[in-house]
Image (cartoon, rainbow, N blue to C red):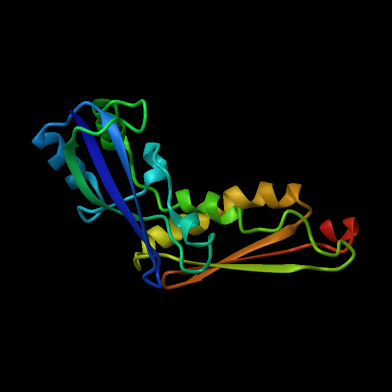
Length: 186
């Protein structure tokens, strides 16, 4: 027997997609209960933090409706073949050791940034709005700080400077601009 883990991604506009993973071996009922208890609000988790696929891109790419959180919908025994090499026990240990981090989404947000300004001779302003699934001020603050630290280097390498982040409620806006020349850097 193996372990089936089903999960769902639902964006802010209520578009949904699902996936599953089958791990080699089985979990005890106590381990399943532990996993559910370890989820945020006993159901939410971030698959990318535990080696599973994040599902946002299945809904047409990242946009303002996306966030990091997925819903763990089912953990059950199955006689189907494993879909990955990890054992259920290894998954359990990794899952239980994970601290859920809203800032994980910051890396995904970077993929929304342009690789280079459209016209390098003019200032370019790019604004990205990220709406979180839940309005938790501490999580939003943490995500803003993560965006600042992760994005600063990536943007500088792409010719952008002047990273600015602001947030109201559960919406984070990231703005960057391309300086017209090197003298504006100083």
